[in-house]
Length: 421
Image (cartoon, rainbow, N blue to C red; front, side):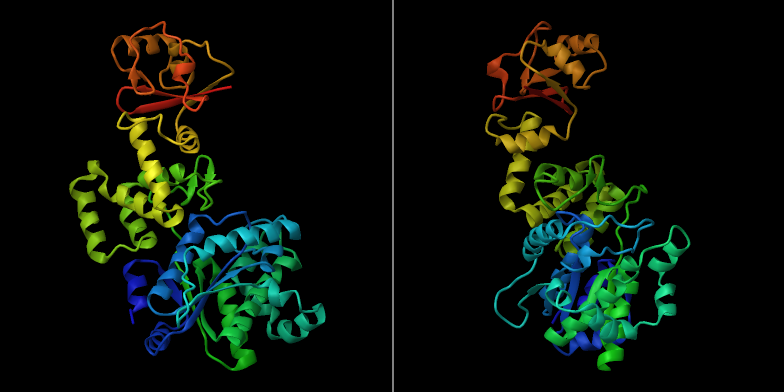
């Protein structure tokens, strides 16, 4: 059985454990059951959630049994961790819809093949909805000293500001009860999550000790940061989602392809299943040949395949090449082309009839119409990868891709787009 803790330490994702030596012994004695929870605070998981989900996947690959929990109940309440203001509560219908979408995403990363490591997927609404308020207060709430709850970082931080409602204050009790229920139902003895979840997770450890007299474990992964100080998993358009309808596979691929040299090796360790030898070879490539961006390409390819599948990877790679004149734009699916053009400067016009030089300027690829005319004169202006030599050229229906789009290029590397209609 793989020593998963050594693997997590090498990959630099391990933040905290309750007692690493005791946990290591338990892991070495045979398969254990481990769970991670994902609240439906949005219609999709994002790449920050993916870091935790992949730790759960690594535990399964190391021979342990994973449980993916989707927070049908806790998603109705809202976790105060990492927040300075009260959450806006979503309706039960919205939460139920998001639970269904996130269940599908979690399922993609776990194996449900029958056997000792077969995964289980649950919603905490299944047991929480059955509890009355009296039962909850008597059977669970009585085990939580208020002074200890107030001392938790997520609570203390809010009490120093605008405060928090009893609803969010009780979140840690609900999460602790989830651990207790999974311990009773499935023999689960390890909960994992991001390091901002440490207080909530250890509340569950304490509850199981008080109620069942059992010793269970907690483990958290490091929150991912970027070397340039910007927030990990964010783009100019917002979060990087796992749902392709929210972040297109093309945009997802580009996000990883544009990883900073200072970040890319760490991202390869956290988000891919490449071996130590493969990652060390890519690390050397970053040092020796940073211009080649081999590590970034490996990261983008692995991540896009992992999240969206090999077919989508092939489509986005083809789109990337075609935009720069290394493939056929006409053969790209409309959705892939639209997603690609969403990531570059783009002009929108109601109808054909606008001269090419105006489109080049309106897209932002050049600073003015005179600069556009100069680009044409110097032979560096392209429409759908065809060089434009006439400064007065006006695109026609024949230039439209899928009846809507045109691809502009200035020189070898500057890409823009036009959408008509």
